[in-house]
Image 1 (cartoon, rainbow, N blue to C red):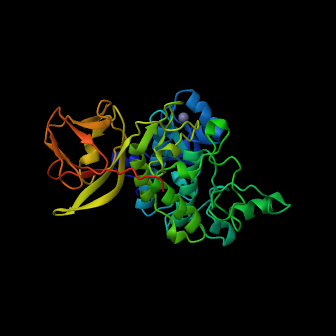
Image 2: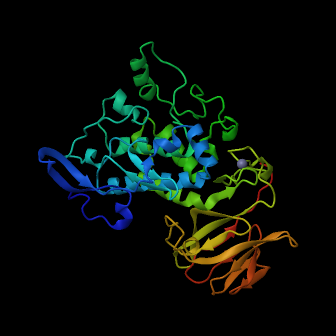
Image 3: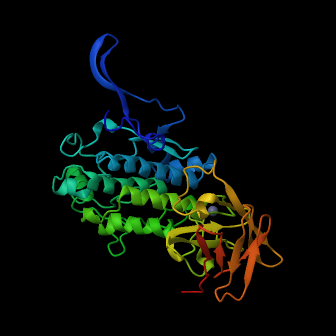
Length: 410
Ligand SMILES: [Zn+2]
């Protein structure tokens, strides 16, 4: 109770801290604790993402993948709070989070099972399928490092609707022994680049055509974290990314989404694939069609006059809005853009065949070509061309943006 007694509201929303201890219940001596009650719209995470069929059912009811992305971010945020207090959860899996899919909200359960090094020892080893392999192979006790493995598996399960460590072969005639081997000694990432033993046959095929989503549909930052967690860090826990790294990459991913013209689903726009004709919707397989969105790469001033690329990109198409948190330094996307200031929007100019960025903020914005030969300015209500290679200035003290060049075929 002391550990989680004074959390700020932006942290407390992700966990259910114990509020009081129980001595008696209905006149009988009982031991327990009281926690905040969550609304009836919250259900166990497993109900939404156990497999592709569960998710497809949600999509039929109008939910989108963007909501799953927000849920994954909330899960990471909950673990950030816990690890920030020096604790470990020890039992991260899809039954220990309650989720409101409409809001993209997740609340962590089982906080009574947390591990506090030197004070509260682990009471459970975790759930098969989510447990770090060293718990099974070396009898290691749950810790922040083993949590990092479970968190990666749970985040990817929430985004791809499958356990990415799921084995496809039995390793022993005794099913219990086989279970222990496949999640422990023989644990293997299903998309390991060299070892294809657990590689699903339908991997990378469109989800709506009985395919299995690949981690390669995720943003480059999330792909990299996946590789660190499940390839490099599988046997080397120190290499696993922290909950905070996941939280940040998941937060940024929300601004890299694109809508499919065919099925309406949202997915990270695969700007890293060349030529653009190779970019398809991972849900229905439809090709992305021109006009392709523009991608802004953001730079931030670290020392006076010195700007550095930050790992944040903004994918923009016709009608997309630019929010204050995108251009103001040291900010990341808020959990909801409901209260966020809109500073501009994008329009497609069919006559000139280019996107225009309309300034609705007030200050003067400028765009210049790489050779500085061409220069445009835009005040309130005016617009700038978004031409590949152009540098966009949003004014003193703000971030800079470069319109990403579209490289030809690799
Ligand atoms: Zn589609």
